[in-house]
Image 1 (cartoon, rainbow, N blue to C red):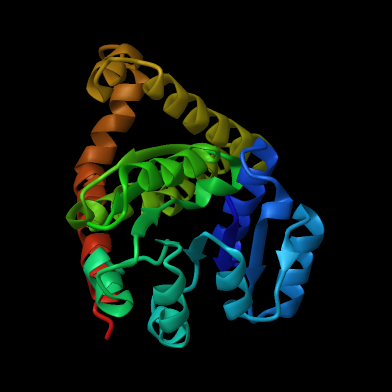
Image 2: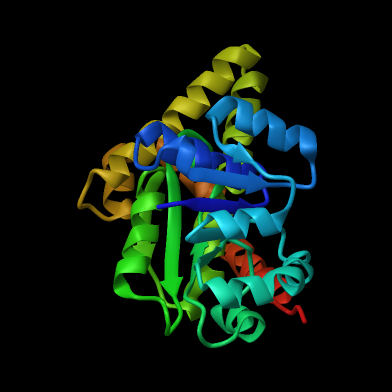
Length: 269
């Protein structure tokens, strides 16, 4: 499999570093182009991939092409590459937020196999959560090959294209909210006398361990909450304040706001 990346930003770099480190695809089988020559040069130096001077060279060298540019730039990029992509018919994999399969089919035509993928920032540490969907032309084998690539940097699921905005909110935006939660926990510890380093370590490890426990358990989150909560204890006192201040309602509202913004980002022409 020869893979090319149109764009070499943070997410593309994380994917490249993840799949090369896993041994799934050799660095000699991967190429990329990015208008930021220094960024591209640094990535090639770290991973051993081929850095091309233009997007056309990437498409010509690849049977799978990752469209890894910001959604607002994707129409312009594809305008220059559509004829070449239609002629060669590589598998096109888009990771642009808000860009639906219908958008991509409209730009590339009905005969190009397209897979839409939505990883999150945790790809940088090999713990991504990715949703994958294919258009009518993409074969099961092609979709599975993309799933395998993203499984090398975390976990991947097949999802209907219409559900991507919800997934993007729950899995894509939420790491930032988790970071905010850790920061708030640490500030609480700092106010009570812990050092900055102690508070941050305690908060980070608590959230990491809690996520690991939940992922390995068949129990509902509320069942685990009950296990931590003793009647009249400290945890219950804190839970009561969180709910009084609207913690759960705020998170649900944040998901709704992120979904709304994802739909707005997809309003491109």
